[in-house]
Length: 259
Image 1 (cartoon, rainbow, N blue to C red):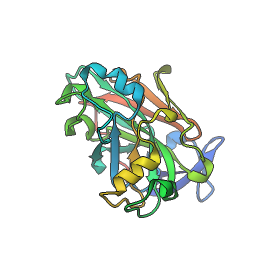
Image 2: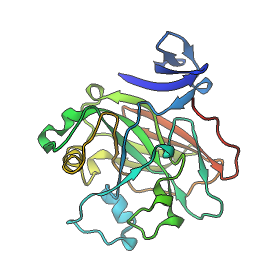
Image 3: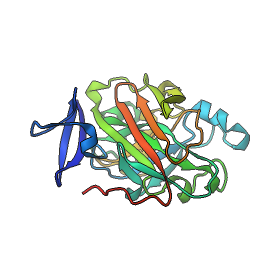
Image 4: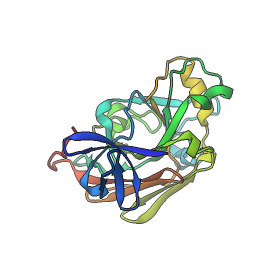
């Protein structure tokens, strides 16, 4: 099942796909432009992975000091960084290189602590699409993201749908694509993850408790390119959906806040 969360007429609704847009739980059918899309689940802790695709590591090889013995590169995101489908993300004034990152987002379904790899997938509720922007100008170096790079307000887009695990039985066989203004810029495949989903859950739950609603952003493949104000960025993952987002200038009026 695919579900979304949207704001409409002063209330938050559960929504479902429909041929003419989306269907609210009360049966009303609306064009998707008439609602404010929220993240498709109540977001808890956001755990993000860096450098988790071999081709992306190769893409940045000249700037990296990564070895096969390194543990996963993990960082956290605050709640202000998260926005939904069709949201707007600001490009800071004066920066030279801001890019998208299409990622498979794994949503935890129940409390997980010291979970073995063999049991890990039983703790997954579902999946969604993430576009996790980065501003390369602000990196202290090229392989340890700092707060200004990866924790910007409105810089992490989630949605539009949460897809149950039952409807996506093999997350290792998904293609990822990113389009900028309709032009294909990035593509990859989840089979190329360095640390797969079970190993990430085993690793993370070994030292922290994962709760329902926590989300693991599994990293992006190669093909990241600069985006500018006015660009429309669409990230797609097979079986999950198409996540659309627009880049705006830093001095643009504040977007309409979700209730």
